[in-house]
Length: 219
Image (cartoon, rainbow, N blue to C red):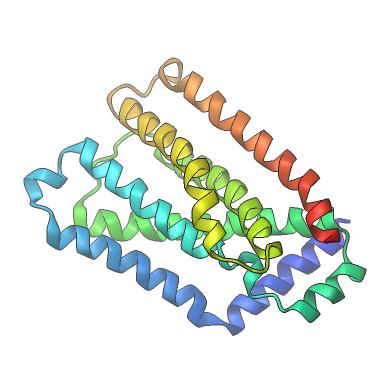
């Protein structure tokens, strides 16, 4: 199973390397969004931490939906038919979850680099990189399942937007709350409850992905 998962990861990496314009378009969208914030807001406004961190996670939200939505859509019908006999549904969805998480984590670090260069780095808490890691993990898990569902429903990309926002917005709200609280007080006791809620959401998302994708793949 592990060997097949690595084969899928390698296959997805080769596809992305061959289709560099997909990654570059997402990166351009990311940098452009940050630059628009830079030229729109007054320095005195953006340097209030609540606004700074809220705008950062909002940018992350739209970049995540844009990038993960391609997860299944760049696969042709014939290629999926070939995968049907080559891989099991569990191997394929686990590989997609891992790849989307790594892909989103790279985008998150690109985002914080450009965001900090243009708008300053106001987040001094040691928990910030843990938040990026947890945020990438949470958002990628939810969007991967939604992308799989929308792909099976006649490859309707509109469904991604319809289904993703009700799921992602609560996650985003928790991430923003943790960011604000940990900026003031980095004590574990302060963010413990929200952290456990995110972990629970991830367990549910991964479990649903693993279970439901078996039925989606058969159809």
